[in-house]
Amino acid sequence: MDYTLVFLLSLLQVLSLTTANSLSEAVMKSKVKWMAEQLVVKVNRDFQFPPELTLSPPADELDGSSSSVIAVLEGYNGLISDTLNGATQIKYEISSLTGYLDQWRQGHCSEPRPKPPASGRLQELQSAKEFVHTVSMEALMRVKEFLKLLLKNLEHLQTC
Image (cartoon, rainbow, N blue to C red; front, side, top):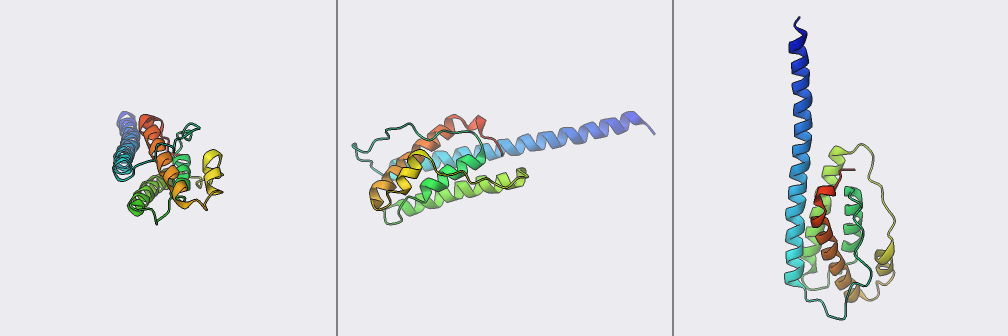
């Protein structure tokens, strides 16, 4: 048997798997980019933020893992009230983005998704739920800023 042919076929298989995986990651990042850009546009278009409502601490850190991105977006999405005019569609689209990321992550990661605890401003907002519309507006602002951060650092988005 010709070992050169066996070696070349093995090499071709490895290259095709590697290329398919990087192509899959490129497609995922492209879709995440498109979804995030659409969300930022809709939040800017549909909501007028009061000037006195500013983000004092910097936006949430982006560690690059899809699990972290999902956790942050789900945390803020849970704080946005359905009674806020126009919020239902935004919440649906945030859920679509996190669902897409989670489904992609499940197909590419062997370990289960960790559930990081709420920290910083997210935790503070969760404890101030009695101010429904104020919390909703701040959560929307933070989602927008977090998505902008994600868009700037999309090349760092990791699978697991």
